[in-house]
Length: 326
Ligand SMILES: [Zn+2]
Image 1 (cartoon, rainbow, N blue to C red):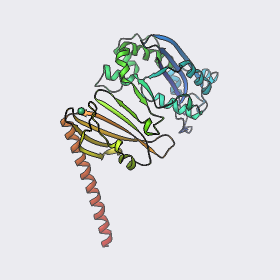
Image 2 (image 1 turned 180 degrees about the vertical axis):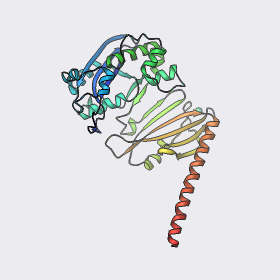
Image 3 (image 1 turned 90 degrees about the vertical axis):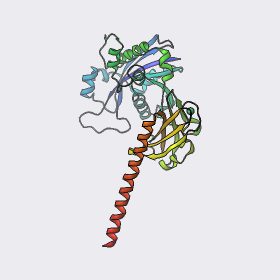
């Protein structure tokens, strides 16, 4: 298996031109470095793309990347470059990116040109930004690529923000961190979300587990599903008993706290996601170990929310009564 360390440059709407919601960011450059299992370089790929939706190069993109309008105008269109790139990647390869959004936008671009069949999802990939944080800067926010390059004392011999340069730096960051450390820390891209029970995604790390469900008609339907509600211990897999049952917090995220007699408190979180162009929803559930104080904080959060909701209802019904009295 090969690693494809890939970076894209994007163009967007200029001068108040309407944004096309199907393709808010349009790929104008692909740069990639192919590494073998020991992270040794095999080959590299670089191509600019002639944009179709946002033909004019946004001045910020131009200034940031140094790409010129002339360069884009004489480039091949996206379908041509993409097919060429995917053939170069080969069948037995896994994408590595700096950050988690690029592959989502890539798939939006592909969908726009009806090329989504060339990349079957959900698929595993490596988010090097997340992995760098986990291995090198655990208490920090997501770092810029240049921060990682500085932190790992990598020579800065190329300007940043050209796709092939950023892919090159990302590949060197990977080499510094080492294949063994990186390998277990894969992510799953679920832009093409699971449609059946068999396709549902389960990922587990040391202290953290993730589940991505199939689609449901509504939030309520999702929340009444046994698998969605389940809280199995991340370590031993036992059905950890709930100490605090699922409740909805701010912005519709649901929380619960379960307890494994052997491994302690587990915080459950459920977020609802909407597939592009669809009314249905699916669920991303995470389970992670927390300590007793953190469990107590969740208990307090639930109390506050229940109290506020009660007050609101009470207030509303009082207002209705007042109206009826008139
Ligand atoms: Zn356990």
